[in-house]
Amino acid sequence: MSRSQKSPLRFDVESFLRTLRSKPKTIEYRKKSNIFVQGDDADAVFYTQKGRVKLSVTSEQGKAAIIGVLNGGSLFGEGCMAGQPLRMMTATAISDCMLLRIEKTVMIAALHERHDFSEFFTAYVLSRNIRYEADLVDQLFNSSEKRLARILLLLARYGKEGQPERVVPKISHETLAQMVGTTRPHISRFMNKLKKLGFIEYDGGGLEVHNSLINMTLHE
Image 1 (cartoon, rainbow, N blue to C red):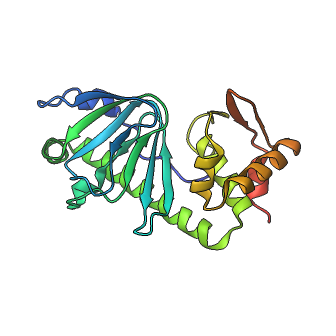
Image 2 (image 1 turned 60 degrees about the vertical axis):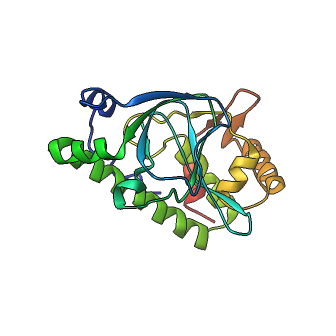
């Protein structure tokens, strides 16, 4: 993870979306409910006002993998803008969420009419793709322990502009295992190891990630 990587251009997405002629629909999703499922029609983009969402894919053999976890202020479902007729992944609320649903036709019009929004959206999508590429390299070449350390830092937003969150809302070891690509027992063992080494602290409430964990991602 590069600490020098810049975030997409600053843009007040939520305020802009509320100025659209066709107002986005506000929808609430309870924890563990699906926002859309792999194979559904891809006809809208979503903006996370509040809560956290996980994106996952399932193989034909039924094996699931988590592609990413999104916090408030994130856009997702943008594949429909590239001509994808069906959803390539499943989006699930991992906490109670409040989302804005923007129909594909409305997004297309907004991108054509507003240069500043189009510039922000392009930078946002490119930044997301860079993250996916980094995740792939991480999966191919790094140990599961190092991948877990990197994911914990990403969840705490280390390397982003502004202050990292440090305290990450509670996330299950099963979810972390799907993100890392390993087993839950392995995650539990390594989380205990990180705790003993003082890199993280966690209890029933949340997970605190210390910046000393960055050093671990730099060395095997």
